[in-house]
Image 1 (spheres, one colour):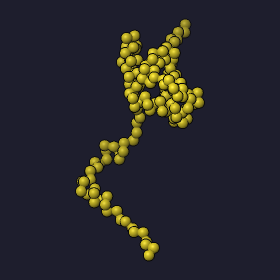
Image 2 (cartoon, helix red, strand yellow):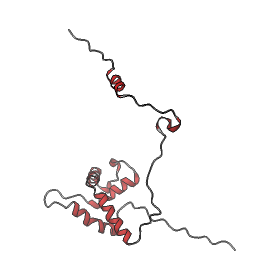
Image 3 (cartoon, helix red, strand yellow):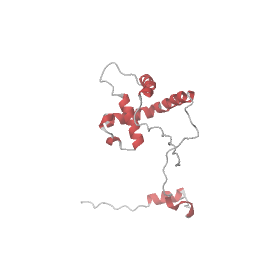
Length: 154
């Protein structure tokens, strides 16, 4: 008899856009932090902008290469800058984390941080240590550049 193959558990889908259930939790907080103005130009679609921000952060593409389905790239970037400077993403993360924790959905065993590996500058720890330049010598080096005077037209 042949062995039965186990079906592998399907990993959760990668979030590229905000699902409806999540948007219902986020929208009131966005409207509270950034209420729509009663006059002037209508505000851009913030769900579309948030989807663009998620796409940009997940894919690593340039802001000016965002697909048109997310709206104007400069508008999406402007909302990203505004939310980042105001600390809105941190507040939103805290609220969502609290709600997720209440549901028992936070698995602290499996957390990851994105990082990059690169070559150590100046050869790493195996090379000779670099001595700092003394401040008095640094000033002399900076001021010792040779200046050539422009020929005068006299």
